Image (cartoon, rainbow, N blue to C red; front, side, top):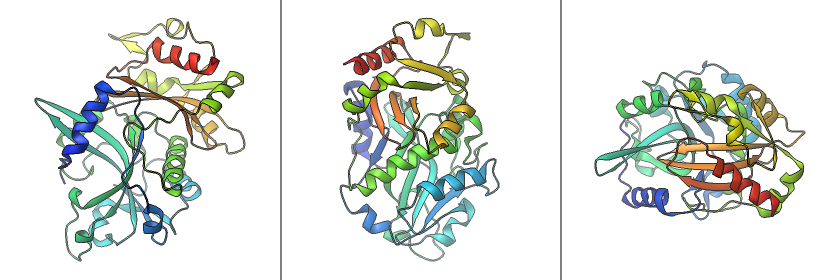
Amino acid sequence: MTFYYARPLLFSLLLFVCFSYPAQAQLETFYSRGILDRIKNGNTHVLVNDTSFPRAAEFLDVFKKNWTITKSVSFLKKQDLNENVIANDTYFILEPYKIAAGHSTVVIFTLNLFTPKDRAIKKGRKFRAQDEDWLAQIQLGIDRTAIGEVYVDTDMGQSFSFDFNGNKHIFNWSPGFLKSYLQIISAAITADKKIGLTHEQTNKDQVAKLKNQTIYINADDYRDGGIFTRDGHSLDTLKLFKDVTFKYKLISNEELDKKILDDKTPTFYLLSVLTGGCKMVSVINSQTGEQIYLRFTGATWNLKPGDLKDLSKQIEK
């Protein structure tokens, strides 16, 4: 299955957004109303290469606790999809698509929620990418190895060297991060809310309350992804945080994952996502999944002092 989508309007919007707009949403929904009514009586399938991938039980537990707007949720092997294409059922997949613009190609990697189009509901028919009716997507960042695999993959990710766990090729990805993403999607669908590429999601009242909170930062992913490095050398994190006025703490991915999964205490964490040449910086409330701060900073890979300086200003207002 190839990943070239005939979506000219989406293509032009993405390219325009990267260079022209001050903010971009990590979540995009594709219908203004009625999604919940379409899917609430169906089941949800999470497409994987193998149901025994590392931490599979933890990922499935997060789905069952945080995805409750359909009747059930379970793993489904991609190789079994053709026999399990069901009207009004929903499917989650880690899925890339490519946008060709002149001599350049932009890769967008997403946690994609779709339902099959009517034409796909036919026994014995091979399911194709064009048969997906997209409902919502969360944009994710991937490393250079994964980007290379995306370019050559033609079979729905079955040739990837990673499964749904990401195998460290997907930044800000774990059962904890998945919890936040499911909360974000569920809230939008339940509210019957269409969210576009340039939707502003900054909650000024909630951001002001960060004066008395610690913002946690996933240091592991930033170092592995090169966000804390330049030309093979570690960035001076003291310089990076020198103008920061809010309380922050660099912690490991494992530590942050545990904090997000703890439903008793809200944790506020910084999320920096580079996707399709666009970088988004946000602060998320782990208890609700709400992105209380969001800033689009253009086509830059590294986290920059200005990204954090703007957050400081917003908190101090």
